[in-house]
Image 1 (tube, rainbow, N blue to C red):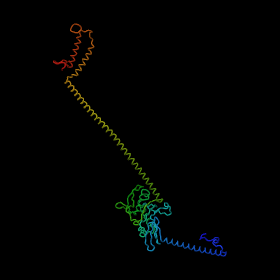
Image 2: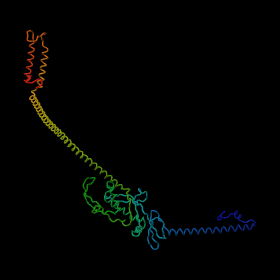
Image 3: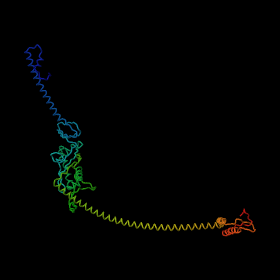
Image 4: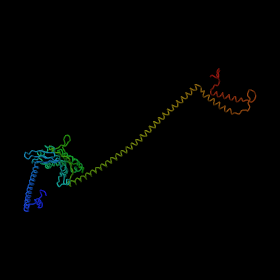
Length: 443
């Protein structure tokens, strides 16, 4: 049994010394029970005092110290002097029962309808286009608050925003709403749906960053995309400076140290009537575009056919001209070839004449030099050989007696041989006699 447990009868009996009388034992039991009740009462009061002291400490602690959580900063206003100070870094600092306002360092601003955000509150911003059509625009924006202590204090003192919710509703929301509405006024609902959707987002973001545009009205004649008729319309246009840049009005966030980033348009929620109108306009534009495309195609085909015909004519002319030129060239070539052939023949003739003249002159000179002795000797030898061969085959007597006596002699043969020699020598102009005074060894 511990010191704080209530004693039982058995436990109390164990504490009574041996030898004590029954009356004494009962007295000791009564005394023990009374002592326990007194102890228990004192222990309860002590616990109450401890609890009270802890509660006071806790209350005093909340009033004495504040904690800056990560991702936030705090602005403190002293309870007596009203002096303001800010703490931007996480950690504890003295509160001293002063008023503390906690701000987020960055927060996402939602301007979305309930379908996009999943909340019951519809925060989409309604805009009106220059054709009178209405649309709810949904999106988000990131708000980055000041990064210096003085700017954090100025947000509350100089610009009068009590907390972030107050700043979001009185500053951020109007900035985004004005930018969206002015941008919508620069175009029609159909244009925001189709060809100028990117312009809508760009112009809105440009105005959120630098302030809304200064605009002016301009009247000009335009061609209606559906009817194709020229009409006069008034348009709001963005003023531009001398460099061609948009002119902005003063930005409400200027000097606050607040930065807006990550702008995104998530949804264009056109009314049912506007959607039907846009659909009709798109269908009409598509029909017009199709008709124009077909007309342009037909015109293009006609131009192509005309161009092809011209090309064929030009091609035929070119081919005929080519044939003509080829014939002229061929005739010219033949003429030139004939001239070349004639020149070649003349040159060949002249060459043959010159060769003949040269050969004749050579022969003349040879004859003049030796009287054609070689030719004459060759002819003489051949002639002698021919008649000698024939003469050798004549019929002669079997017995011939020589001398000047009587009897059969072959004087005819001898005379014939001498006659042939003289005739040939005379024909060839050969002089076979040996000059007088010459010997066989001289000439």
